[in-house]
Image 1 (cartoon, one colour):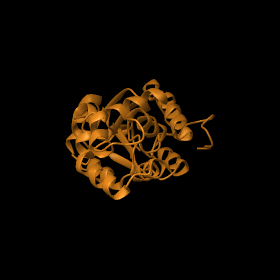
Image 2 (spheres, one colour):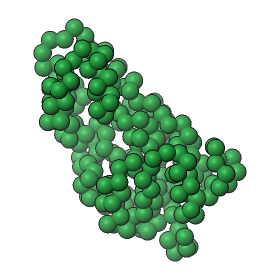
Image 3 (cartoon, rainbow, N blue to C red):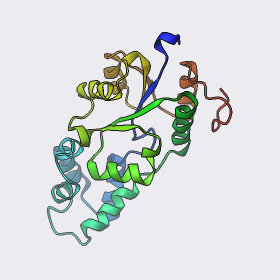
Image 4 (cartoon, helix red, strand yellow):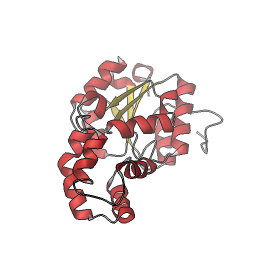
Length: 215
C-alpha cells in the first residue's frame, strides 16, 4: 500500500459484519416457530414487500400488517416487534476492531447497508454504532439499496473521499464486486481473524491493544 492510495475511509455493512442480520430468513423461521405461523405464506408475503420496506417506503407497522397481521392473531404487533428487535445481536470483536482502527489511523467510518427504518434506528441506538460511525448510508434513509450501484456513488460523494482511499467490508461478494467497479477495494468478511489479517495486509496495522490480534 503506497502513500498515494493510503486508506483513509472504511465503508461497512452492518448485518453479519458488526451485528447479526436484522431480519433474515433464519430470524423469520424462528418467528414462525415462536408464533406458530405458516412459514411458506409468511416468506411469500415478505419477498413481495421487503425491498420497499428496506428502501424506507413502508413502515414497520405497514410491513407487519401485510406479512403477519393480514388476519387475526393471538398475539399483538408490539409483542412481535419486540421479537423482531431481539434478533439483533452484536459481534463485539468486530465492533471493537473498527473502533480501534478508526482511532489508530484517524479513519472516516461510513455504514453502507440495506436496512429498514425502525430496525436500523434500533440497532444504531442499542449498540451505540453512532459513537464510531461518522455517517450512515442506509437504504431506508437514501431510498436506494444494494446492489444498486448508485448507493456507492452516494457514499463516495458524502464521504468526500476518492475511491482508491476507501476499503469496503461486507459479507456479500456481489456487493464487493459492484463497489470494485468504482475503484473501491473490498474485504469479503467471513470472520474476525481473516478481516483483521486483511486490514493489516493493506497497511492498517492496529498496534498493541487490538482485541485478539497481533499484527
